[in-house]
Image (cartoon, rainbow, N blue to C red; front, side, top):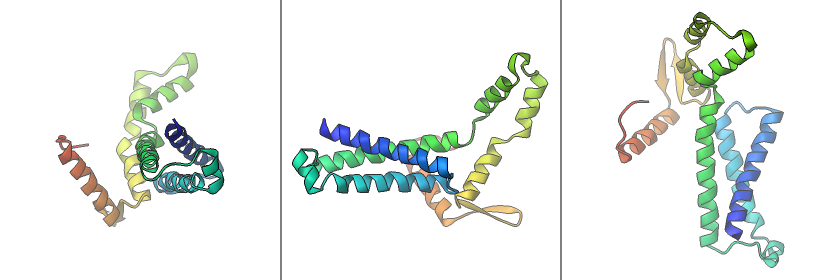
Length: 170
């Protein structure tokens, strides 16, 4: 039970730090900031539970297995949250439509208005801007070129796809 409490507490605290930081100022490189926050909370938490005063209270983690269990849980939550956050970072077309129609109140929106709205906003453009911001691609004159960071991520995604025997595509 101690392992579960510590693991959930560390992940919850990392999420709280994330909320506080985003309230102050949203970082330019949000994914890197999330990874840094979750990693730092894990490291500091593991240091904290190894302090002598914590050891005497019975909340210290036994090395190596309890530390490994907490670390695996925390890293899994961190990676899952980063993936989920990247999906909600930009509103999906469905959420954009729902929010926009709701703003119209009881009057609603016509089919033509909805179609015009959809044609005006490309989800690909927003994802491309996010990749530029995160330095996964860069623009050179009239073309986009993958960076070393983007090439590394492409390798990871391709390897994962091969491992999962997934079809190619997005």
